[in-house]
Amino acid sequence: RPRTCTARPPDLPPPMPSNPAALHTIALSLCRQGLSVNQFGALTALSIHGPLPSVRIAQIYGLSTAALVRIMDTLTRRGLIHRLPHTDRRERLSAITPAGQQLLDSITTPAPHEIQSPASVPAPTLSTAA
Image (tube, rainbow, N blue to C red; front, side, top):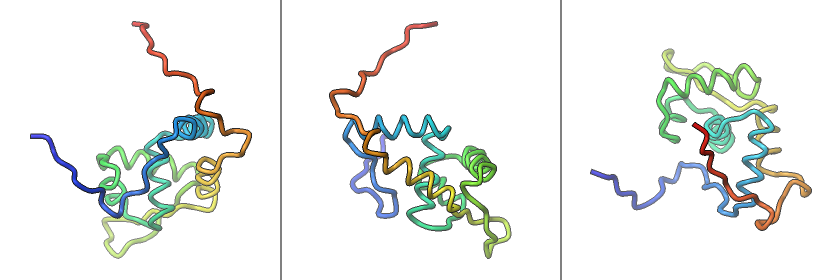
């Protein structure tokens, strides 16, 4: 039976911009920085909420714990987050580093020359390659 959503929970990050040009600009920035959408989501959650246990980030974005472990390991290796001790020894908090915040800011606040008008955003293409 399909789930019915009546309201957005208050602890979710703000929605992505609906302007196609802004979405295209963010997608290009993610690609240039070598970040996946899920890695971007984890950084965004940590930026908005502060240090969080990994399980909470997984809940916010609907990710499996295994997927989130890979995401967090990659972000840690890149120096974009660091892990902090938690009162529950089975769990650790993750926090965004200054480098992670700077990267996130560069993606979400593009330089004026990077912003494209909606008319200049290329239409999506479908690949028919087998």
